[in-house]
Amino acid sequence: MCAVKVGKLAKVTVGTWVTQGTYVVAEIGTYSLSGFSRDTLESTSFGDDVKEYTFVLGDAGEVTFSGNYDPTADAAFNAVSPQEYLRSCCSNGLTMTSGHLRFYIDSTSYMTVGGAGTLLLTKVHAIGFDKAGIGTISFTAKVSGGAMVTV
Image (cartoon, rainbow, N blue to C red):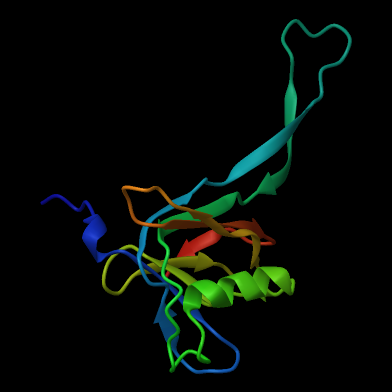
């Protein structure tokens, strides 16, 4: 049997330190994880015919997510929209810890930064409008100190 995942079950949620639970970041329709990579340093020495490399630090990558712009406030979510909350986190230099920002792959499983890692929102509220379309918004978060894990 095929074990592929259907995108229509995906969603992005955010939790806060003030309120309990998580809230859907409304109108998000796309997210992407750039993946984990590991840097290398050249370790070639005299007499070698082929370059040699040594693994060094890993880079857990970044997460981008985007969708339709929705500034509507959510009374249960500190009277601001989750999209606005993410903007506020970036502006104030707040980091997202494990489980705080969740990228669902189906109705129960999600990806989040693992262990002691954090997500640093590096670009928020990138808004675009077209005369014949719906307003869009995008966000980018850098994964720091730990890789993304599936829960």
